[in-house]
Amino acid sequence: MPDNPMSQSGQSLLFLTDEQLRKGIEAMFFAYRGFTADPDRILADMEYGRAHHRAIHFIHRSPGTTVNNLLSILGVTKQSLNRVLRTLIEDGLVESRIGKEDKRERHLHLTVKGAELERSLSDAQRDRMRAAYRAAGPVAVAGFRQVLEAMMDQDLRRHFDTLKDRGA
Amino acid sequence: MPDNPMSQSGQSLLFLTDEQLRKGIEAMFFAYRGFTADPDRILADMEYGRAHHRAIHFIHRSPGTTVNNLLSILGVTKQSLNRVLRTLIEDGLVESRIGKEDKRERHLHLTVKGAELERSLSDAQRDRMRAAYRAAGPVAVAGFRQVLEAMMDQDLRRHFDTLKDRGA
DNA sequence: CTTGGAATGTCAACAAGGCTGACTTATCCT
DNA sequence: AGGATAAGTCAGCCTTGTTGACATTCCAAG
Image (cartoon, rainbow over all chains, first blue to last red; front, side, top):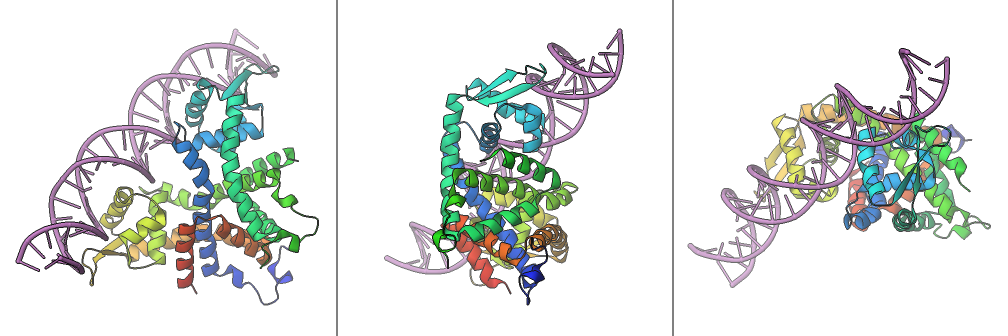
């Protein structure tokens, strides 16, 4: 684990100049725009927005998650999430099941229709991601992930790791 | 230039699985939240928001830029930008100078007061960035930048490169 | 020298998606 | 029985994005 840059590059620390950091900041800004552009285009034709996409993504990723858990992953207020969730449930994309152990809880699942939308959104987003990964190569991708993880807040990092563990 | 993953990793392509791509997508989501968190905290105490930060950042980066140029960098409508710009000018953070060659154009500059706010915002953002870079190391940072650049839209990439050339 | 088009700015109206605060309902646990 | 927790809802507000219409100013081409 190379925590110290000197261990990798004798002459370095040049990558920590204000100018380099500024470029990194701008790269994040421009890349994030590309990152959301494709799903946004799909959503623009519907009555949904980016907030719906995020909810659908994380419900897909953690089927049966509770409202509270989703709330803390997304980092919004329950009123804000509720507005989104209500339309998704009304439109039959998300199903809300009363908890068996604790009947106060609602467990969220995508319906078939919801899973279809999730597919089309994540296909679009993954296509761009795949192209970027392929162009940059596996070593670059590993670095990409390392830096992103180091940029997260503690609590977000915890959520990220929890999701990660569910994966393949 | 390793465009082909096979050239770096004989067994690979595993980094292109849907699961890996999903994790990359989630990493972008969580990291971006961290990325904006510190300046957002500063701005919350004022009458400004993230849109003001973006305008200030790019005016600082390209002093004398025109409104039209800023418009295409930020990717918003002129009405949206104008609202932000107007308050910044009224509050004495940004100066708008009529063009010498083409008097229709307005060239934007930060005032001393504007530069001070820019400093405090970018200091906060760079501190986090620096910590992340330091933790990940120069090789990871290079990969981070490669993947981000590959994720950008063509026109955004052009803006990014133009800004890059002005740098040290 | 006039006129068309470009750059800028402004007004109005609207929508998405954040926020706070207050409150209800149902359920759980002590 | 009573306090704490999970969820949902109502009302109102803010920021930041959108469209559409329009005025002004100025350059440049005819």
